[in-house]
Length: 84
Image 1 (tube, rainbow, N blue to C red):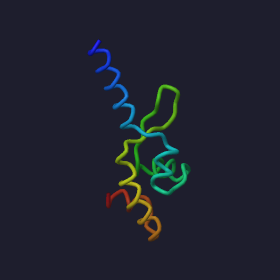
Image 2 (cartoon, one colour):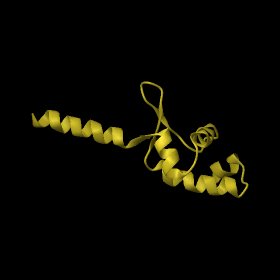
Image 3 (cartoon, rainbow, N blue to C red):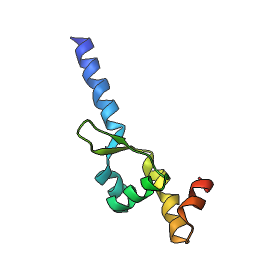
Image 4 (tube, rainbow, N blue to C red):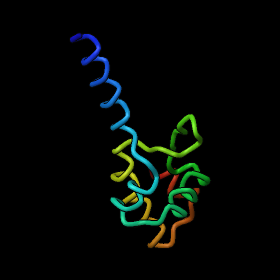
């Protein structure tokens, strides 16, 4: 029975390392549309669930912050990509 409990625990922790787009957007203080735009520009990567939903690693919040600052400063996406 321990192996089943351990397997359940691992699958929960691996799911937890990936966070849905809405939650990441909320944590970073941006809209989901901004995250999709960052992904289109190659600045942020996501994975897809089997149902097609985007998920991001929890570390994405820390990557989003400088991206926001660079865009606010007026830098184009290509320049930001080179800086990151």
